Image (cartoon, rainbow, N blue to C red; front, top):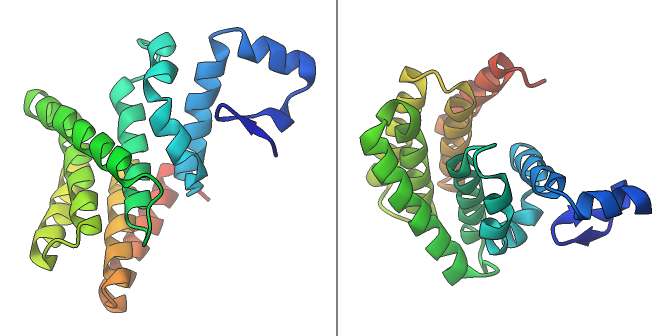
Length: 193
């Protein structure tokens, strides 16, 4: 596949590509591509998504939730920061911190809608920063509880998945299995096969 400006150009004929590149559809396609990449654990777009965030969101503002897009990109940045040698650590760290700041404000205004996202991103940040186990665990568990209480099934699944991965990284397979099995059950309830 050939990727230009975040868009897989190999999936379009030259005529289609010309149309896509000259209209607002491109930004919707980039957003959907980001969503697909995130939920299918294809994090190869994270660098591009962070560097083009503002120009991608501005034309479609009002059609999608900007914070949802920013949250997903911040989680992708956390994934990169967990690697041994992250690609752009300062840029990714800055993006995560900015997203946390905005989510904290929103979670104070509307906790039912934003608290679980804030807590999950905070847990992920604690994870890649190798914070004490008690702190990381408390944050994942709070994110799981908030997502559960507010019926955000996809984020309940995701928080369980990330918490299970945390336990795998800590060489605790028994704990990991419990959370990963819960994540699978939640993803299945959400409609994933």
